[in-house]
Length: 200
Ligand SMILES: [Zn+2]
Image (cartoon, rainbow, N blue to C red; front, side, top):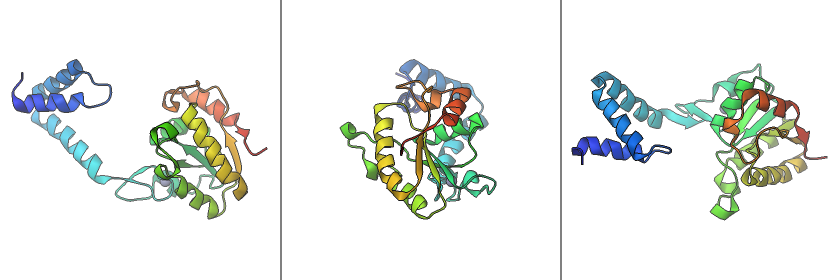
């Protein structure tokens, strides 16, 4: 209905999560009216993000150009504590809570037998390598309070406890069935402080 280049952009926006047809058209028309520089900055940012974003070789969180991330490089942080999260966005929420000073490990998802997502699809092997490397005293499971998060937590606990590390799980207080991403910082801070052991 619109000229092809404009309709193509509307269609691309429409494929993004949470963007319906009306919002897709609104964004496209916004860019049509915007200056050429603004539109080019956006297209460059998308291309550079795809080209340069990599995963930290230590914690598997996002980093740039193959580098180790700033948290893994920060030697003021407690290397005996690893907080396991599903998603890099969860890491950001825990960081903002200010209640954790150890390091992280990002799984990039959770186990979901119904959808065929198993251990091999997550960064679990990388976590075990870190633990087997020694020096880790406690692994804190900071996973979504969902069935998938619980299944993943139980599986990790079965793998980690025999390796002689303490495995703890954040306290309830994070809404059940919700995404950790939406927990407020205070709630999450308390949940980390109130974590309980799974190996008792
Ligand atoms: Zn890292």
